[in-house]
Amino acid sequence: MTIWFTADTHFGHTNIIQYCKRPFISVTEMDELLIENWNRSVKPDDTIYHLGDFTLAGKNAASVYFQRLDGKIHVIPGGHDNKWLGKDEYFTRSGHPVTILPPLYTLKTSLPEVEHPQLIVLCHYAMRVWDRSHYGSWHLYGHSHGNLPPVEKSLDAGVDCWDYRPISLAMVCRKIGAG
Image (spheres, rainbow, N blue to C red):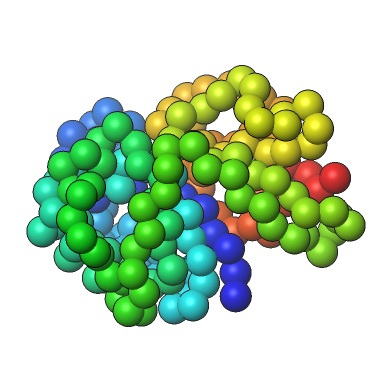
């Protein structure tokens, strides 16, 4: 099983194409490519953390999008997720319930490259400092759509930075550097 990260899919959001200069003719084209790229990467039992702005649409649309996506999805809400948050349960294409996490969440994971567990602080918003940032923890975020200068040990996980697809923990390790 692989761990994945993504943010800022903005499913169903027509104006994001213009705002972020996404190379799509329509929101349908954008949504279909995002779903295709997600499912090519994320396998049914993989874990994926979505760092906010999943969709601006309401509960019914969010349910349809989740039902088309593979994996065990954990959402760290962003500012545009309030229209669909609060429904009892959503399920993925793989049949897993979608988990809504707090807006600031620390993931503790084992990496083959290092002896100790790696802490990764997840939030929709970028931070300059975060829990244990001076002790080797990492920070993944969205919201900025690739428009912020990099800060050491942090990374924008948004689709605009990663060819409209999720990034794996292995890719994060290569980019941020283990240890």
